[in-house]
Amino acid sequence: MTRHARVKEGFNFVLDSSSRLSLQRQVRQRIVDCIHRGVLRPARRMPSSRALAARLGVSRNTVSLAYDALLAEGFLVSRARSGVFVAPDPPRSRIAAHRRVVNPYSPLASRLPAPFGEARFRCPANWHQYPYPFLDGRIGPDLLPLAEWREAMRLACARQDAAQWNAGTDDADDAMLLEELRSKVLPVRGIDAGSDELLVLTSQRHALHLSIDLLVRKGTAVVVEEPCDEELHRQLADRQAEISVLDPELGRVLPQGAIVVTSARRFHAALASAPGRLLAAVAAAEGVLIELDPGPEVRDGGRQQPSLFALDGEDRVIYIGHLAAAVSSGEPPGLLVADAAFIERARELRRHQGVMIAPPMQRSWAYFIGLGHYSAGLARNGRILERRRDALRDALNHYMHESVEIHNLPGTSAYWVSVPPGFNARELAQAAAAKGVLLELVEVGGSDVLLMGVTGLNEAQIRAGVHALASITRRQRPAASRGANEAPSTLRGRALRETMAGVTLLYDTVYGEPCTLCFHRNGEMSGTAGYANEDSDSGRWWIEGDHWFRQWQRWAYGEISSFSIVVDGDQMHWYDDAGLLADSALIVRKPASRRKERA
Image (cartoon, rainbow, N blue to C red):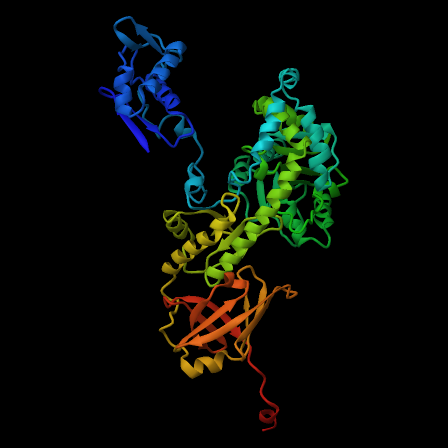
């Protein structure tokens, strides 16, 4: 609910009863804003507290308290028997109150580089108001350990700690924070670093850009992963680097003296049997490796592999990590670990850039880590995100098996969702946003894919959000997709029962694992999924009229579903009540009988 005031000509403001600010503070804020914008000019008479309260629909006492505060702060002045006026010289008044018109052809604008491509996703400020924000890295309030952060910040602002804020130099990190990072955070990745080998940056991206600034010159050979971050590619191109793509199988020799930028997680997955191969290839080329560590959102059963920095024995690796976003109050600090000489130059460059985390925030992080809040929050949120990731996987498999393919990297809670040929991922994302489903569009290998994360919505929202997305994809399904009414014909009556009784089906889940389904003649059904049949379930099936029904105990949320069945060669297709394709599987044909063989 809002309260609107129009006080004389040009003086308008709105109060929001749902705001966390009190109505009295909102009145103060709006009046100060009108003074700064020139709407309320110096010496202008203000409406009486009774008149303004009546227009806003608030108590007179609310406006009176706001006036009293503004009088004390010098924004307003009171004149005996005349009323309240805007001060002749209010604090912090602006010289110009008019709005400047943006000139895209100004001398400054004409010198700017080209903007990023339209594929770059920009998160809306009100993302948290969407019903289904599937945005990776946007942290919902249920994940943030607020009580723990209050304790850490309160301790950091204590008199004894506050006295040390300005005691150090302008380029030294908080000694307490460095010790906590060295003893509690970095050892989890197998890193044993001295205080002179560690630098704290405002973000992981800042650490990467700073490293590129120090190492890359015109003609420097830089080898990047595919897909390459757009902003990183822009920075390398601006420095006129010779950019090439890293072969995951390391089948090609690296350029001499190359700088390799890679993710430890991705290449540990590709080179799990011999993680030293990449380091050996870099050493053979007399190169340097920049290791970007995304950080463990999900522990994946507790497995945690050492970083490439920990395996390096020649000081060729620069480790760039960050503290976990899921427990961070704002952008998590970036961590740069390297040879002491490199860190000293990086510290010098950081000082010249004038970009450093404020001492109170560094000390707050030190207490947050030292009191055990960081590790406890990681463990708690890791379990929550693992459940949410599985819920997203199961929902995509249930509602969109025929529409998408999904992939993720170990330790992450987000999925890359690829739409099939004929779909337009950008149009799908736009249509989904209009229905309250917020998706991030990214470019992978030259194709648009959807990045779906679960850090900003709870587990209960995931299924409903995927169901809403599935309804949109079905409406956008290419015209070539066949419906249940098209040839071959739908199975009915006795033919339907004879086909389903005793049939065995094979199909792949949306996350790429094999699944076997058996529909027994007695109406029972069983299924196994996974490469080692690690997931299994049972249920029942039956026929009513010309529709086939099934109900698993756990799979498909244990719900009763009905379908029309079409057999096309070795393929069986399920169609929903709207006549749209819901799923497909391969029929396992029984071998011919011995009598037929002898004949």
